[in-house]
Every structure is written in C-alpha cells, then in structure tokens.
Length: 89
Image (tube, rainbow, N blue to C red; front, side):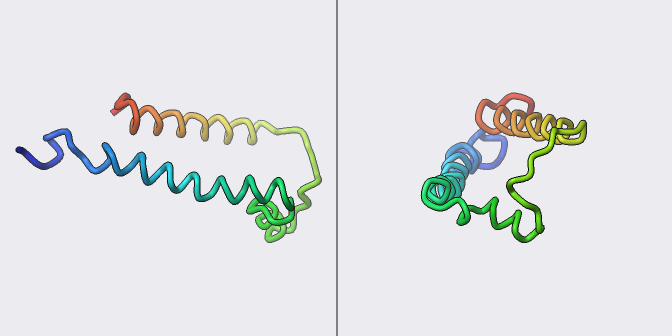
C-alpha cells in the first residue's frame, strides 16, 4: 500500500472534518446556552465590552460591511467545497 500525498489518503480525509466538527460544537454549544440563559455571558458580549462598544447600538450597514460579509461568504464557501467536496483544488 502506498503512502504519501499521491496515494489519495491524507489526514484531512477523516481527521479534518472530525476536528472541525468538534471545534465548532465546542464553541457553539456554550454560546447557545449562554444566549438562552444570560446574554451577558456570551463571547460576543465580552468582545463588545473589551472594545467598549454598546451591543444595543444598531446602524445601517455600509458598503464596507457588505464587502467584508461577501468576502467572508466567498472564503467559507470555497473552504467548504475544497475540503469536503474536493472542488476548486
């Protein structure tokens, strides 16, 4: 049996999706619980507090917000298709 990158069996085939799922769940489960039980206990509230930004302020999105969001969506889509569907190699 061959080994190496040309054999098609990389660590990402099994370990990357498992590691990714565990990492996402370890962040999402406490965050969802914090949102339900005490909104002041969330990670986002901590960031707002450190940056001295009121979480209650709302303002319309600017072009920069839409551009950053679009770039983030593009990157996440590319990573998803690249890692899980082996497209855009």
